[in-house]
Image 1 (cartoon, rainbow, N blue to C red):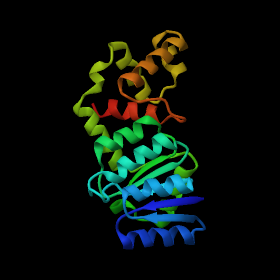
Image 2 (cartoon, one colour):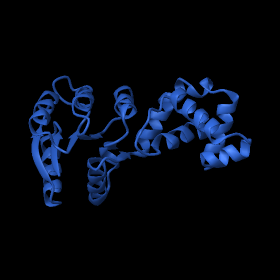
Image 3 (cartoon, rainbow, N blue to C red):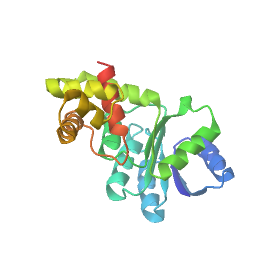
Image 4 (cartoon, rainbow, N blue to C red):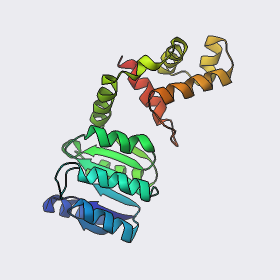
Length: 214
C-alpha cells in the first residue's frame, strides 16, 4: 500500500512513518503543510492519505480542507483523518459526500498500534472507520438542527422499527404495506437526515443513532 502522511509535528510524522514501514507499507511522501499535501498526492496518487486537521499555513482546518479537495479531485484515494480535534463543519462535508474509503480517528484515543494499522488498511480498502467520539460530536451537531422534525409520522414509525433492528421486509409486514412502500419511506428518511448513498449500511446505522438519541 502506498501512503502519504501530512502531519506538522516532526516527531509524530517520523513515528507514523516508522510504524507503517515496519508493518510493510510504503510511505511515499511525508509533508508538514496542506499545500505540500496537495502537491504530493497529485504527484504520487497514493492509495491512502493520512491527514492532520490543523496544519500550516493557517494552523486552523487547512488539512481537512485539503482532504476535501483531494476527495473532489481524486475520489479513489482513501482519506484517514488523524487529529486531536473534531472539526464539525468540514468533517460533516468529508463524511457526508461519500462514506467509502474514509476515516476519522482522534490521536489521543488510539491505544493500540495493531488497531491503528487495521484502520489504515480498512480505509485503504474502501471501508469506513470512525472514532465513536467523532460520531457522537457530529450527531450532537446534527441534533442542534433537529432533522428528525422533517420526518412525517409514518417515516418516524418506520425509523422506530429500523431502530428495533427490523429489515425493510419485516417493517413492511409489521405495517401491512408493500416492500416498495417501505423502500420509499427509508429513502425519504435518509434524504431528510442528510445521509447520502454509500456502498454499505453505514447511513442506516447513523439514522438509527439519531433516532435513539432523540
